[in-house]
Amino acid sequence: MDVAILTVGDEILAGDTTNTNASWLAEEISGRGSRVRRILTVPDDRALIATYVADWRSAFDAVLVTGGLGDTPDDVTMEAVADAVGREMVVYGNERERLVEQARRFREANPEMTEEYDLDLDVDAAASLPVDARPLSTDVGWAPGCVVENVYVFPGFPDEMQAMFGLVAEEFVGDAVSEVVWTPTPEGALGDVIDGIDERFDVAVGSYPDKGETPGRLKVSGTDPEEVDDAVAWIRDNLDVVDDPDTVPNGGE
Image 1 (spheres, one colour):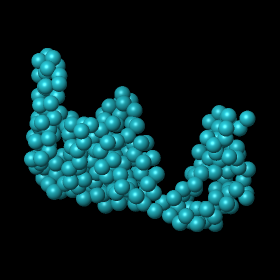
Image 2 (tube, one colour):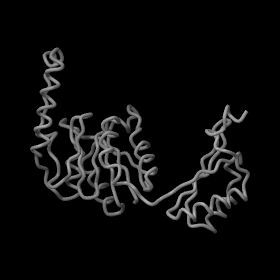
Image 3 (tube, one colour):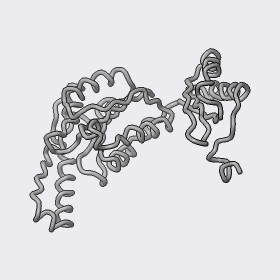
């Protein structure tokens, strides 16, 4: 499965918020054997979000969108996704009931806060999703996400996003496999080895340079486990390699 990740938020582009969602999702998806082919951050711009979702939903097996859910004026992601798939927005009754009950429990648990602040919760806006979408909701967050066609919409708060992704994680199981080879060889001297892999094997290889005393690594990925194993064996025959530093007791001493 080829996947694209679109993160939404002016605060990310301004540097006020670190985009941990994209890296977390990429690791989760790759770990399940699917491949992340695009990662992009865009502002809270309904037309721009819709453009990318519309383009990517036909180019990739799945599009994951995070951020911009809720009932405030800058929460435009769900409307943008509806635009991209050509569907109207409707209030989902079950989600509305859940939000009303959640708001009631919050007010009961936080009487001082509700007296001090005027909590204007627009449950209709928060419970609105594209027609015939599959709602996604957890006890961790407020506004629901959804799945509509091959587009998955998650909230931007990392804990909420991670809990919601857990509801659909098994849908991203793919056939990609990968192995890592560690090497003290500088990245600038790996060109011949990488070219040799490209010429001999149907795999992708990524080079990740060392940091401090940690050796660099080559990550070999493909859809044929035997092909990946053969490529790794060829690397070991043609390159100075070392053990995974995480498996060497006391740093190898």
